[in-house]
Figure 1 (cartoon, rainbow, N blue to C red):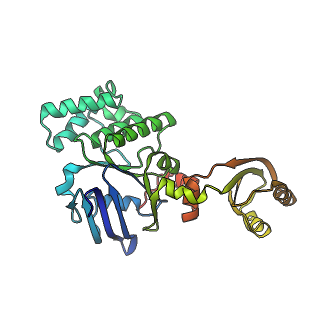
Figure 2 (cartoon, helix red, strand yellow; figure 1 turned 30 degrees about the horizontal axis):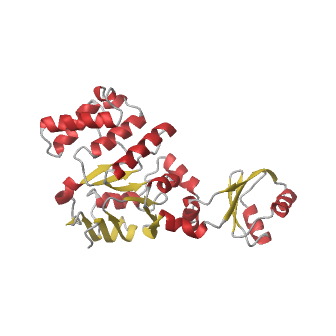
Figure 3 (spheres, helix red, strand yellow; figure 1 turned 135 degrees about the vertical axis):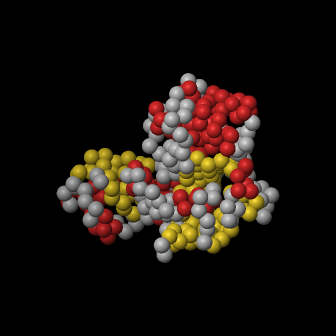
Length: 325
């Protein structure tokens, strides 16, 4: 194994009640890398991160973290990793400062050092005043920030972030992304799972897509985007649209790909698009086009092509509170 490898997973398999949640997953994360791990609900993301962090044991396969074999547990590498779960695991009856000091004590920091470290993190995360209040009274954005601070209280080399911005308002999500970027720039290796593909595109260097327990692609963001740079993408806002029209459109315009979602019609093509015949076709089927706009190809398009799942569907699934295996 290369010296620059921070995390290496080989042939990971995990079954639950006879159902294969993870089916032979292989990847490695390099030291100092911000690595994205994306997939829809039930794809196996949480199961993989649970195996990597010691919350579950693989039925088959091996896990190496920081050069240490952690297949049967992460105890020997505990000092190397920090974990930020998708739901906070801090104590509502303790203040922010007390929560951080408690977490630091679990990692063996001496009293004066843990208090100093806790105060420094409260300052860095903009939580100095909140640090004096009980954690249970925090907003969701403040809870996420303190949970991340708790995950790095012992200055780990490797940080696991599970859905860090889910349910956070726009301003709070922007602050959290800046914190994540700052940690990355400082040299921390970050393993990030997220339902927000645009967030992964903005933050990550490499991304793995997992579907039905298997990794279908691992590339840098640039490599993932390269094949679709010349693609023409249009979004049409329509009235009277029905899912069934997609089959009729595909038959009438075989050179285009169509996706129907609510009142929106998405069209993809390698060649320039003449809208007039398409609009006439839709009008003849009782569908009125209100607006048409060109879209820049993005990582969402890569995800849709690889999985057949729309990115908005993945976000809605997460918003329902569903927990993936």
